[in-house]
Amino acid sequence: MNSKFIIFIPLFCMIFFSCSNENEYQKSTAVITGNITVDSNLDNSGDYSGIRLMTTARNEFGITDTLFTAVTDSTGHFEGIATFTESDIYPMLVSRSSNVLGIINMVFADGDTIQIAGQIPNITESVTIDSRENEVYKTFERVDSSFDRVVNFINAGYFSADSVGIEVEKWSDIYWEVFETYPEMYAGKLAAENSISLLRTWNDTLMVSRADEIMADLGRILPSTLHTVIEYQAEVGGLENAVAKLDEYRKLTNRRSQLLDIDVQKIELLFDSSRTMEANRFLDQFKSEYSDNPMAMEWAENITYDLEFLAPGNPFPNFDFITISGDTLSNSSLQGKPYLIEITRFDNFLYQQQFDRTVSIYQIYQNFDLEIVTVPVATTDVTLQAFFSERSLLWNVVQPNSFDAEEIVALLNINRLPTRFLIDRDGNIIRRYIGNEYDDVVRGLQQITN
Image 1 (cartoon, rainbow, N blue to C red):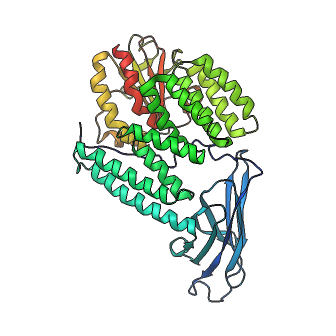
Image 2: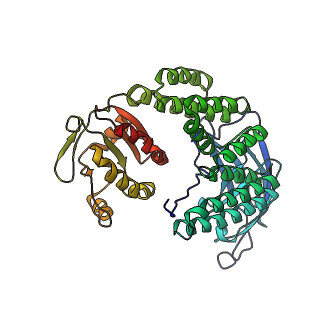
């Protein structure tokens, strides 16, 4: 096994509507008070009035709510009540006379009292935030920062293949200790999520056990962590096993946002497994249950299009491209060959990270006639040349700006980059891979070899 591992924890990688209101009538509150002054070199009047502090967030109906607002008096003092639905990190905008002076990020948690002190003009650097929740979050940040350094050492190859797993499990236990010390705190819950996600492939049994404990105790789990657990359940026991775990978790919560996340995972799981009829049936129930949530309905509209036109087994939509070498590529010209078509930007960091993996895939599966087609959107010739000045150009790359990018994005329902489609020899879709889902591509490629 290669001793070099890239470890990525999608801590805040959440489905866009996962912070829906649990109940629009249940509100959490926190007291926020403090002093904001002005550097005498900037204003020696001693009058610190008129400094506004404001936090806003979009709710599940797509409407921007004001969670907190206050204005300083002449001494720089302010106080107020923040009202919100979820404990989370929220940005607070600091402004004066309509000029934005900085943004302060802090944890809002129910029942907490937050004291803030800072000075303009360097408000972001000078601010101090004092509250129990925010102090515990600093503990989490210290652990997180230490683990980041370990990850850098792992990625640099300083750990042997055998010791990587031991090190990862050790840090998973450290995160779990933070959770056990502060189980009711926002930072404790984040630490639990990190602990669970880290265990994937290293100790899957413990990963599931801890996820089960979190669901039983708290009734909620982040979508990214839920996806990791369900992915493992599907690997070891197939679709039915994964669906059973989702149904088990559904019984452990009455939180509307968590139920929504579980239902999304179930529909996408059925969709990816070509169980189109079941996916459509659950999608109809989803539309009825969450009809009052515009963002959920937007997701449902997107998945409806996918189920009708882009489901596994469906013919891939017609295309006609010109490559940078002047060749013409179309469905008919690739008929009889499997191919991977990827829509991306060359300045996309995730695509750059995954490039070596794509090279390896191409070098192995070209023996099975695999073709790769890269369709670069929002890309110039200069960007393309810069990208390949340090990399080998091994497969077909479409000439930038030789196609209607908006048409391609609409036709293939592209919401994130990179997005890839694996197509079989008959021109039918094997599976779509969005972002980090590309890690699962080998299972799709095995269908080519079979």
